[in-house]
Length: 176
Image (tube, rainbow, N blue to C red; front, side, top):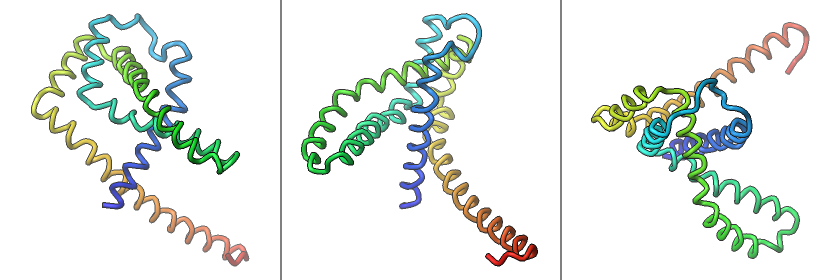
């Protein structure tokens, strides 16, 4: 249970880093995918896909994270401001929550730029089908379990590398 919660926090942090570090510069630049602008119909289909996939739920914690990070930055200036900063942070979070739709719209534009209208229709039909619904339900679980396994795998690999490097350093006369 704790590992699952930690994995979700790690995934949320990775997504937040991706969005904060990659999406804004990508949106500020020219489109990454060359070609004509997506049609309004393609954008509508893409929006339906990102909504059915629950993209908004993935991005929603970002607002809280940004507000919390900013609050903590000001707390370092003067911890006596904690009460006021907590109140302001609550207000800011409520005011900024609707801005998640900007990320949802950007994600829809990315889908619409990379898939044809016909492909978007097929994706939508898939996600509305029983197997698509199962994929939407099970994929987060598979990702959680994969991340947990990758964490354990990485820890074990790290121990192997540590032992190997120590052995190699010992052969060169360095006792670590």
